[in-house]
Length: 317
Image (tube, rainbow, N blue to C red; front, side, top):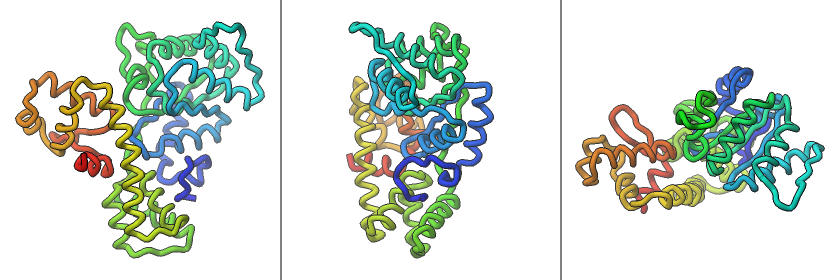
């Protein structure tokens, strides 16, 4: 069901990502792969559908920030598969234990979903050991921060230098594909809303499959009216994205500068330079940080906030 809010797990449920699914199948034969994209782009659905087709192993790391948490999730998944895992002594080396669990996944494809908050130093060393020692293919999903940056942009000193995974970047649906997604979803409920309502949904939430599905769920499952569904999706989306934005700002020395910059967008470099009163180096660093966190993107010579909900919440800050 297209308007089901849970990640999709079967190919027939996955709308508009056939090309990316086949690219993932092609790349994983010889490469590790990172699936990248902003929130509500369908990274988890793409990963789970693929893993189900290849009898792979899915590990959900959302909110996991330590090697202990990571290892415990691996062990939990191993035990569900009937693989016996022994913790050993009271004093545990969690990185070594994680390697032991991976050794039991020999020959498998393992999907690590939302890896960005894991500690880079320990994780990169562990991944090098897996690369060098075991016949295991890994697929990562996440935002371009934290461990994902260490994977995709390894320095010469990095354990994974020269071993960066291939990238699949999920983009929003084109306008017509967004219309098709909504129309197909409504057909599953034998509902035929006015074209004007669908146009407003696409205008409000762009081609983000997660936001479109959320709206459809509000209309068809929870029986909200059009206007109430639009507002409910925005309010829920605002809470999700505001939390992510705050998490990003907490790591910055001058968070107010970032908020001011975001409020100026869309804008060109020269416009930002004139309004922020910071030197070129600082401005470049700020823009780079925001791009890596997938909060903004550059279109031609203009920096924009691509997610329509993020744009609106920044305006409300």
